[in-house]
Length: 174
Image (tube, rainbow, N blue to C red):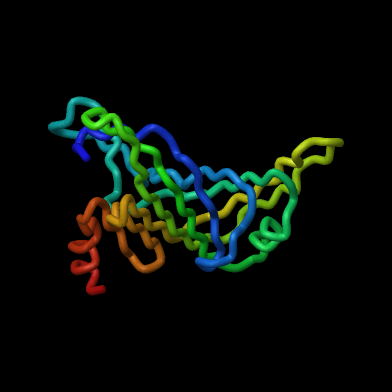
């Protein structure tokens, strides 16, 4: 397979709690990684620059949208940390061979509930229930290769194999 593969779409995915408990029919919005930043200005700078704080991120929310209110959605409302795994299959196309392949995606989060919306009731319609969880930990793999890991409570931020906080931890003596 060539290096010119074109990622086309998520073929399918499943969400598991504690690695084994299938959560149900859901679609997910993964947490955005938005750096905590500060605007700097001063001598030698022609204007202002928004500067990220190395290895530090703002809130990371995972949203799960359910077809109907389920026991799984209610379980995620318990005020405790939940270990969730999202496992997906990404469809890629290789123009050199004209063939499709699947790229494995795995996302692991440790998250606590922020919001549980039981949805609406309408005859013959989905209830559109929703769960929103705040992630203190996220790790993502593509085809078995670790791409990033952020663990806010343990001062870990590794992106594309680079430990963003190694020098900071050393400076802090941790």
